[in-house]
Structure formats: C-alpha cells, structure tokens
Length: 308
Ligand SMILES: NC(=O)c1ccc[n+]([C@@H]2O[C@H](COP(=O)([O-])OP(=O)(O)OC[C@H]3O[C@@H](n4cnc5c(N)ncnc54)[C@H](O)[C@@H]3O)[C@@H](O)[C@H]2O)c1
Image (cartoon, rainbow, N blue to C red; front, side, top):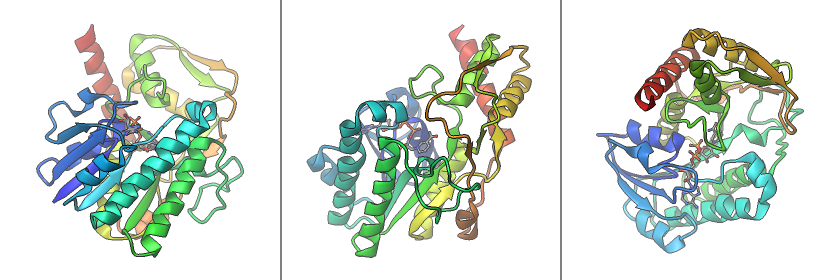
C-alpha cells in the first residue's frame, strides 16, 4: 500500500506516519509552514518539501497512491482572523488541489482533517454531527467548506472521502513554545519547570482532549472502513481546564501555582464530542486520556532532561 500524507511533518501528521511504519510506503508533502522536519526523525518515508498549492507537484505525488490523508492546513484560529485570504488559499485552494489530484489519479480513499471548530458557542453539548454548524473564524469556515467539498466529491463518485472533526488533540511532539501551542503542552512544560500555570477565566470551560495516537488510529480506521461522511473524533468525555491543570500538576509531581487570567476573546465555554457515529462504525480508541496525559508529561520531562 502507498499513502500520501499532506502536512505529514506536523504534530498529528508525524504520528500518522509513525503508525504506518512497516505497513505502507509513505510520502509526506509539507512546506514546513508550521511543521518541523525533525518530527519525522527516525521514521521511514519520502519527504517532499513543497506546497499543496503547487497543483502540478500534488498531481505527480498522487500517482499510484491508494490513500491520501489531507492534514496540511493553516492551523491557527487567531492567524486566520488576521489573514482570511491566506486561510482560504491554503485551506480551500490547497484542499481542492489535493482532491482534484486524487480524482485524476483515481486514489481509492481520501481522509480530511476537519475540526470541532465548525461547531459554535451555542451548539448543544455533547456536539453531534447533525448540529447546525456555527463556525466563528475563517479557520472554522474553511474546515466546514472543506467538508462540503469532500461530500461533493464522494456524492459525484469522483473520490471516496471521509472527514474527521478532531476535538482537542494532544501528545508528544506538540511544541509548547509554538505560536499554535495548546493547553496540555504549555501546562506540562510549566509544571515541570516549576512555573505557575495560567488558566483563563475560572477554568470551568470544558474540553474533550484526545490523544494524538488515538487520532492517528481514527484516521487509519476511517480510511480502511470505506465509510463516507463526517465523524466526530473525540472521547466524548469532558474535563474542565482547571481539572486538567491539576491532573498535570499531579502527574508532574509539581508544586506550581495556578494563576487565573482574564477570559480570552473568542474562547468557547464548552466543547465535548458525541463520538457515537464513529464508535458505531467500529472505531475503538486504543489509549485514552489518563494514559496519554501520563505519556505526554513523561515525554516532556525526558526532553527537558536532554535539553538541560
Ligand atoms: N491539533 C489539534 O487539536 C487539531 C484540532 C482540529 C483539527 N486539526 C487539524 O489537523 C491537521 C493537523 O494539525 P496539527 O495540529 O498537526 O498542526 P501542524 O501545524 O503541526 O500541522 C499542519 C502541517 O501542515 C503543513 N502545511 C501548512 N501549509 C502547507 C502547505 N501550503 N503545503 C504543505 N504543507 C503545509 C505545516 O507545515 C504542518 O506540518 C490540520 O488540518 C488541523 O487543522 C488539529
């Protein structure tokens, strides 16, 4: 089997590449906009440094490929607010280049990395795929648009597609210093360094954190299943940000304080998935929150030890 992973040197992409080691010939297309070449260290794959906006290159790479995982994107909500045109260029024109290449090369399966961001502030929780979407940023709008394009290609019989709406993904290789960093790596890094953890607002906002390894498993599962449509990818369990901070402090054995800062503009209060549709199609998570939190803290402790 041969697979193409766009955005494969990113955080999630590199875990997907790892999952396919020894099972498939892997091609990674990434322009390193937010990914890192080092994420692929020790992994076997053909790395092509280039953009999904290069239609000719994408067409060449899609030849003879069985499955495409489209993860390349402009991934930052704040950046998308600053630059909607760039967001549309990468997330829509880029996606269409890859979809068209898949159609031309008769690629068997196409899986698109969508996001829980397509839901909005007022979505009933836990969110089901049939809820009325309410995207609040150019990033979220392009993810929803992307789903519509994937559905169109499947409905017309051009390419068999599936979309996973990732909830809050975390795990090893997520960089706490990156401008795109999320709560788990920041909390873990600060807890290990004995620095205070900043929680925005009262910390009562809930999130459905899911291990990057279970996301890689879900991508693998849905590609092999032949199912089309849109699926939530989360555990369906919610944890408050304050609870998360305390669990990470305990795992790190840290006495760091928790400080509260004003609520950030645009932050959604509650975000939890109803993953029933993906479960009913046969997906079983292999890791879970506790195990993955422990592993993430351990990986960061080791990295900090190497650096210092
Ligand atoms: N991390 C999360 O919690 C989360 C949640 C929902 C959805 N997603 C989606 O999952 C996917 C992967 O996200 P991630 O967290 O691994 O982020 P990431 O930034 O680590 O990965 C995105 C990758 O896309 C690459 N890229 C950007 N523009 C490109 C272009 N024009 N051509 C080729 N490559 C390009 C980047 O260099 C990077 O390696 C994205 O589509 C993102 O929107 C992530």
